[in-house]
Length: 304
Image (cartoon, rainbow, N blue to C red; front, side, top):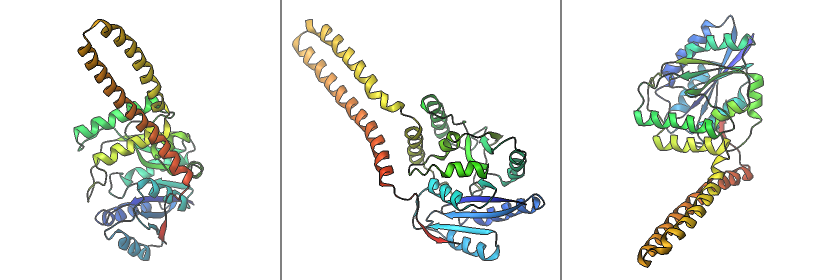
């Protein structure tokens, strides 16, 4: 039978794992006549008892495997490591907090195994339980990203995906250090079936994603798949040149003190815009700097 690898990036999930494991093994039991399962957990340098729980699960269940990082490398590194070590004909990526309902896996399997789709994914059709400000900025990110990016990211789409081996191998070919999986999933192409569902809150524990981390992650997505921000300095330069000509004409007949004040304001504005433009260029140069170093995406301390 076909093998399904369930990849679960985990960071400080000691409260969620005792709930997640029975839920995912229940699905495996339901599908025992269709496919075999392996469960691959990636411990992202957890500071609680996550690793110890994984060791115990590994001893109890031969289907449970894990990779433990030497430190916290981030969820993107966890996803990449999981895909690298997955042996399945199909690979599922999901979180341990049960916000990605395991009950969708049989449905995903039917869509992908039929050959009609290469990937089945979920997308939230509501943001129930999420703060209004956070929801607003998340929606704005998708709209902005889809306008300026090389790839289209479906709003509400999640990392919860059921993929063929061919798609997984294609993703692994993109060995870049600065990873944004939502964009990578779209960039490699393949036919994807999206399953809409209402937002589900965490079964246990607390989220590791603060507003600031989500903001940084969104910038990572924009810089990774769009060169549009690099056009901002050129556009601002044209506008400032035009404004300078207009101001020169307007203030040529105005009292000197007013002229000097206007010039001071313009200089401050130009200085601020130049700093902003240098910051944008610096972000792209920083991404190039880390890629040129060619450091590994993660370092595994323990693999079983």
